[in-house]
Image (cartoon, rainbow over all chains, first blue to last red; front, top):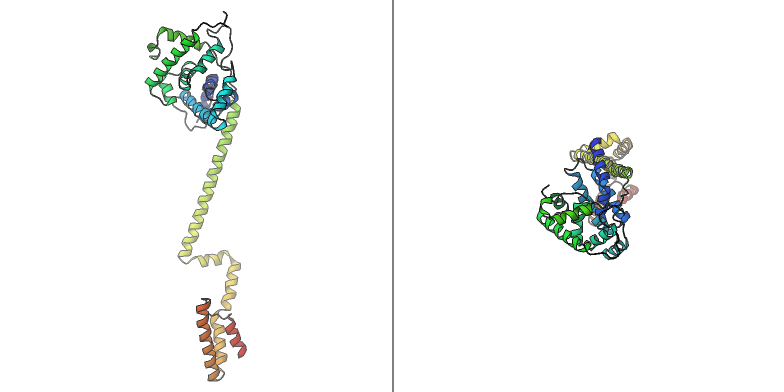
Length: 167
Length: 151
C-alpha cells in the first residue's frame, strides 16, 4: 500500500471516526468502542491493497472487532446493564438539534440490536442499503424492511408527548 | 440515491431529524495505530528470517544425509574433523588382524596339544559370547587377553 493510500484511508477513517465509534457502541461501552475502531484502523492500514469500499470495510471490521470484544471481555448481561446506565453519551447535547439527544438515545436503545444496527449504519454511517447489506451479511430487501420497521418504532416512541421536555 | 425514494415523507423527516444529532467525539489515536502497525509487521519480518534459516538448515541436513547414503560421509568427516580422523588412524594402527596373528603365531611356537586346547577354548568362548551378549569376540576381549597371558 502506497503512502498516499495510507493517507487517504486515514483521512476516511478520521472523518467517520465518531460514527464508527457510535456503531461500536451498539456492542461495547465507551473506551472499548474506541479501542474497537482503533483496532479496525490498524487492520485497515495493514492491508496489502486498499479495500474496494474502505468505508464499508471499516464498518465491517469494527462490527467484527466489537462483537469479538464483547464476547471476550464480559458477559452480555453485565455489559447491557453497564451500557444502560450510561446516559446521554451517544450524541453531543446541542440546543439547536431537531431532536433531544437523550430521548433519541433512549428510543434507539429500545430497538432490537438488529434494527438499531441498521439505523446507525444508515443515519450516522451514511451507508446505502447495499453497503449495509454487505456489512451485515443480509439481503438488501431484509435490510430495507428492518430499516422501515425501525423507523416506525422510533416514530411511535419519539412522537409521544414528553412531559419533561419543554421547548 | 434510489434508497430514499422508497421512504414515506414522514420517514424522511425522521431521518433528517436523526441526522441532526451528532455522535460524541471519538478518541482515535492515528499515531498509536501507526505504531501498532509497525509492531504488527516486525514479527512478520522475523518469521521470514526464521523460515529462511529453517530452510537452509533443512537443505544442509538433507545434503548431509544424501552424501552419507552414497558412502561419502566418512571422507567428509575426515576432511572436516581432523581430530576424529587422527583417532581413526590410531585405531587402524591397532586393528584386529595384527594382534590376532600375534596370538596364533605364539600358539604355533608351542606344542600341538597347547594349540588345540587354545583353539577349543576360543571356539567355545566365541559361541558363548554370540548367544549371551550378541557381540563378536575382539582382540580386546578378556578371553584373548587370558590366552595371551597363558602363553
